[in-house]
Image (cartoon, rainbow, N blue to C red; front, side, top):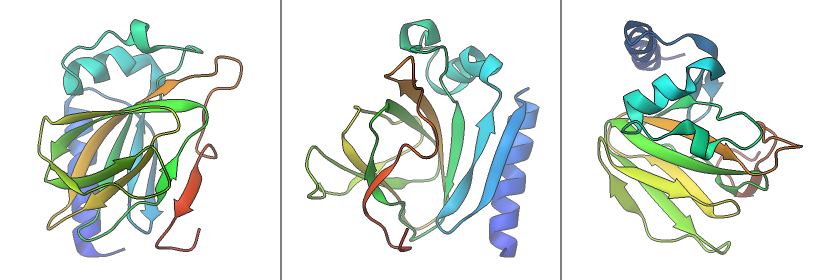
Length: 165
């Protein structure tokens, strides 16, 4: 892992700890960067910190929100993807990121998002998070849409992927 990647992950971990969050899991091995998973019991605190206090009870379906922090590397792209069992809400925490969305497999135009900018992605909406000039840090909440079968990391349909996944 590069020193720069180690540095940004350490910085984000320290920020989350300083905010009182428990990191339930983290993955620094993704080719585009990685993510931190926050303890589900802290979902409302997470929403208060990153999503202007949005009421998590109004979002909960199946009792889970799966709060996460995504860390995307400069010039890296997550797969062009969508999900069958979740919608997502993203808010930029740090850096400037690019996001493409579309209701079809054809990629939409690149739009820049800055700290505090928020985007809501519907279930089935195609989307791609893109690192631009610097590292991007994005808070994410999953809105599970199937209470009997909550979404998980396998609920990804990759339409296109730079890493051959």
